[in-house]
Length: 168
Image (cartoon, rainbow, N blue to C red; front, top):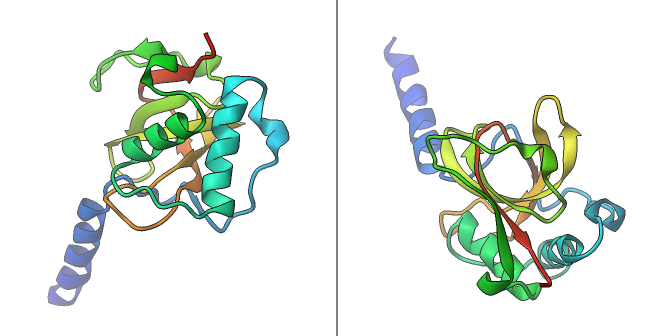
């Protein structure tokens, strides 16, 4: 029994202090960059192209949280706060958004169910399995880690906020 205690405690510490990191949904920044044809058209395409450039070409570090990273992508793509439209604003405890209308480049605030039920921000790219609400996304691990964003997958079952870039 004592032999199991230390590994279990170490695992609990890793999970507790991991923050926004994704475990089962992790592809990483070394994964192949998605093709731009997945990025749709208009402002969403600009957002995702900017994120892709920051991740794969520049390996840009944005210290802070996942929210800070997505905000930096939007701002750099030319969509500061005044050029963002709120598509859905709920509460972390629900009700949750109907995600069927997500568009490439949407800023999605959700629970990171792959890691633990922590709040998280990510950029929607496309559905991998729409019935299971499994999305391919760009995101950042958070917790002031000195790593670039990455390609990930997340379950969007508990989405409490959606922002969209707008040219209007």
